[in-house]
Image (cartoon, rainbow, N blue to C red; front, top):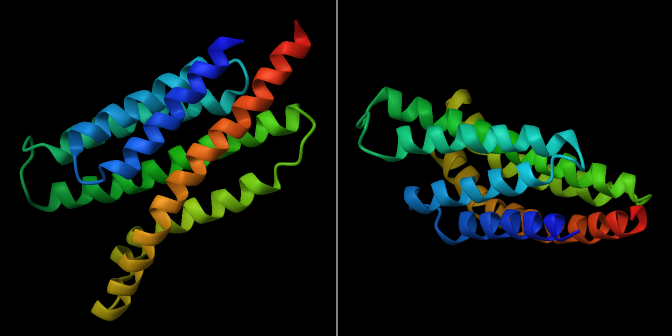
Length: 177
């Protein structure tokens, strides 16, 4: 029963670190490691957790390659940045799907997870779309401003939904024993 509790704590602390240090690549590595560990501990609750763990491991690699002076500035660094945005989007989507699976297993509705998934998706897709579409400076600036608002909201939603899923997961484990 405590395994679910500690896993949710790891996921929540990882999400909090993503909010606290968006520019610090070392703390981002720690955040993704916490997300990966927490998701891996919860893999018995849903296969979505295992997939999220793999995505978090991929983000660790991308953060190391893109955030450190391993490759230096240039086109490869820019490409790794956008690939990292895509993988981060996938990671959040997988975690919200895992939380939704826990809610459905507990007999609850997972509508909130879909709304939170939409907020997370918009915050992660906007930078990718603005780069791919070659938008003008004003539109790119508006997309960046919207992203700076929605990304912390998505992380907070991830943090709060982790505790919501944890409560239901612990209740399910208690009912099964």
